[in-house]
Length: 209
Image (cartoon, rainbow, N blue to C red; front, side, top):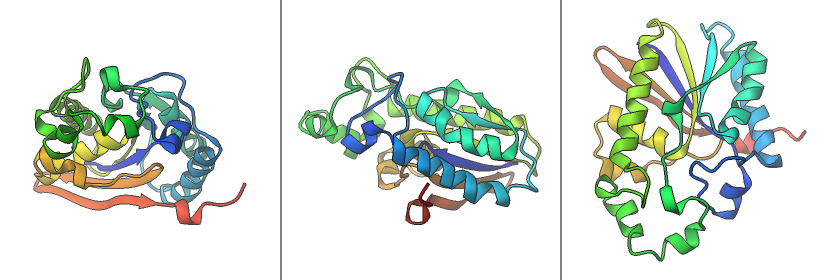
């Protein structure tokens, strides 16, 4: 099975201000996020020159596509939007401040019992996990065992995928950390899965541009 590099989108003002963007349109990378995307391309492109990469898969949301763009350009490939890589549908919570949501009585379930939680008028974490893992299986079926898959997505879907392939209960997935512009690497083989990196973050080495 292929090697999968999950990349969380880089910083945007919703992340910076502590707002839950969800699937809101027109959420773009801010200046720091653009620098993070460039740093990712600078770091990964030389290391992937010998890898067989025909495209970069990305969530269709702008912040993910903008994160993928510099790396796609550096590798000379296109970016392919994939609905399966979308952010969790936060329903009525999208656009709201996390500070306010933490005072909601439902927030405790988000952190302690996410397996039972569904966002109001949105998606459950269980459904989101099924969606992202189905997407991973679909992408793996499109590639050979020695290929490398690059998938640009969002924090919760990446964490949910990692939890599933490591055999972690959904109720434990919030213990994982996936920061903006971080790289998480999974190898999914016939004899099992290996987490090769989690939340590898280049923020401390970002170039000034």
